[in-house]
Image (cartoon, rainbow, N blue to C red):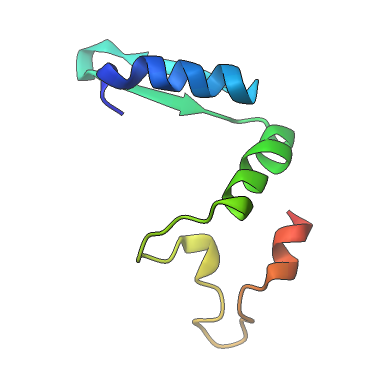
Length: 81
């Protein structure tokens, strides 16, 4: 995100109580990063399950089933995460 959104990322970090905010001043860029598997599984995934993205491109993780021998991505797979 643009560095102007730094405060928004800090609010997200404090509300979720996970992750870190990184700043690249030379590129006017900031990011919210979560590298902890438990934080991704217990905090981030439930958010995207409750509030799915409303975008037209299909995320890479959901493109299963497009090749021979692959099964489609199912709701049960989300539980396994």
